[in-house]
Image 1 (tube, rainbow, N blue to C red):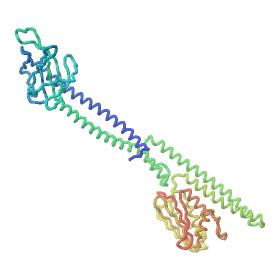
Image 2 (cartoon, rainbow, N blue to C red):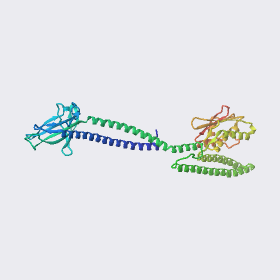
Image 3 (cartoon, rainbow, N blue to C red):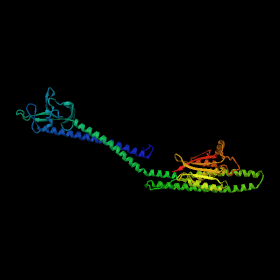
Image 4 (cartoon, rainbow, N blue to C red):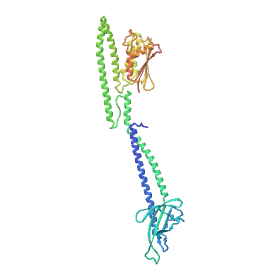
Length: 462
């Protein structure tokens, strides 16, 4: 399921709300239209039956009506069928209306008493009544004046109330069935539309996911730029991102060039000062030599940190570990040829460091070089993937090693423990700082071979 703060959720939720509201509103409208249609059809049937009843009626002299054979609907002959007619005469008796009903066979021995009467057109009145078997009847009543058939009352008329009623339970059942079907239809249609919107939004936002995956490949070092074809709406974004990546790489490259120039300009005067101090004697020469050594150590330290910090801003950095370790082992073995060291390198193919080659060479080179300085005969270099997005670089030697308190001081300040061994004493500190910039860490322990065991965890590129 999409998260609540995602574009997918917002698009689907917004469209779903309006869709459901529209379908519900449409359902109410359709239900009302269907109800009106059913009721109008029912009322039309009552009107038709009443017109037929009136057309078949003739009055006689006994305040009653005789029906001719023209009104022969069988529903009015079946007992309690739900369709009834009733004719009553309106005769004034003591200021009141005396009703003398004449009923259809379907009413048997019962009569109708209309209620809730509402007059509509002309002399037609609509209402309701309670029928046999607790039937709810729709009633149509019309008062008609019929001529008297007797010879004595020629020209006279007599008024009758013609009533036709029908059971509306069947119509109500049809309305209930329609509303039930309509509700299920709306629910199914809503779910179908929401599913269609989900698919549409997912498909529509696929280019954004492609951009995200392309950026992940760049961050992991598997690509240098956004690759692939994007829709016209996303293409400008991809172009700008590629331009930004290229500009970032160019800026970092220039910064690295400036760092290299600075290192060259600083080291040359320091070398001259060191050489002059080495040929001279006295307190001043010793002070100059000591300060030059301190300056060299600080320059090496902070230039390495500056170079590593700049490398972090370059997207798409990826470095294969095995070639770097093999090259370093071969070069450092030649540099320490007088010790006849054995450097064993173990690194699986495909293992890659998510960073610049120069930084991996700086860290691994310092560790292996440090091992070469202190080892008696053998150094083991091992790289292996770890759980998650990291890998372990382990450098062990068979040298004298360090005591626990010495390891802590070596990691904190880069302290030198033997001035007879060449170097600045900042190798481990430089490795620690560069690894920290990449989110890694370093730990010192006792090697199974008796010397120092350095464990360096670094980000792994997929």
